[in-house]
Length: 100
Image 1: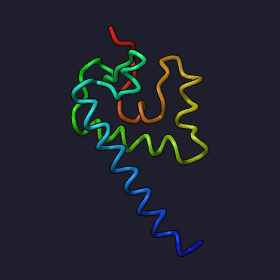
Image 2: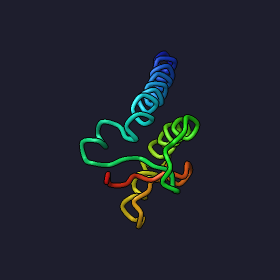
Image 3: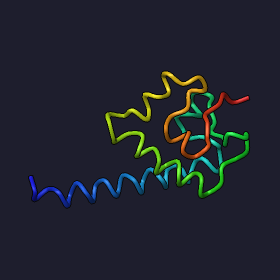
């Protein structure tokens, strides 16, 4: 098992880099990823302004925090929060809204 540790670390790094690039490709242009577009959603800051480069990268990295520690608790928050914001949204001042 210890032999595979470097492989898992490299895979994790590639996954995180891909997630950040994916968001940087779609969010500046469409204010959403393809899945959000499919469901008529868009991503905005809490003051309804478009997201900048830094906030997009920060939100992508914060999603890692939402998913890994304590069994996806950062995503489970959405089920119990009025505005349906996850931990990553609270950390980065973002929210997902219905497209007008």
